[in-house]
Amino acid sequence: MPVPKRRDAGSGAARPLAARQAGADLYRRDLYTWALQQAAALRAGDLEQLDLTNLAEEIQDLGSEQLHKLTSAYRVILIHMLKWDHQPARRTRSWVTSIDSHRALAGDVIEDSLGLQSRQDLALSRAYRRARSDASGEAGLDTGVFPPSCPYTLEEVMSRKFSWPQKSGTR
Image 1 (tube, rainbow, N blue to C red):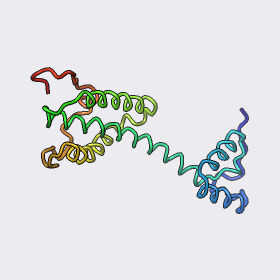
Image 2: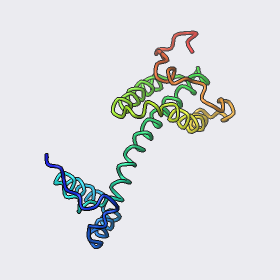
Image 3: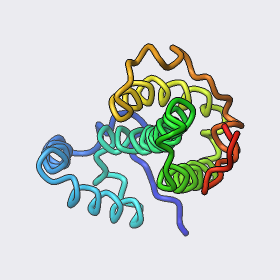
Image 4: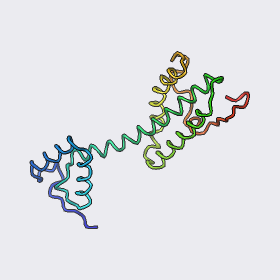
């Protein structure tokens, strides 16, 4: 594939102002069409048609989206773990199923975005802040019942065994 020629490595000053403004306007009005046009320009090596400012922003947002997806999966796992540990009489098969499903999702996110491995502790910490509040609401328990910081290690979150039907004496 030929390497596209660049006129300016800076802010796109070689690109006519009207073309840059049109790209930015389309970005604000119709993200879907803008994205298709940007992808087509990239594939064609037509760097002058790229809306570099917004394109860079969208690429950065893609990375943030992956961290959010991981945090969200951890949050759901943590909600069910907290309820499991604080409401043993109300345990259900659906909690176990949800934990398993969200563990798989978290694993997929890490597998697809290996750079997130170093951010797993951050994701877990962020997830716990919301999970604590969510579990409180779902369980009808005061938030203070749950520890202020996450009581589980990442390994526990991803591998602790939950059995159903419940065996007596199981945590």
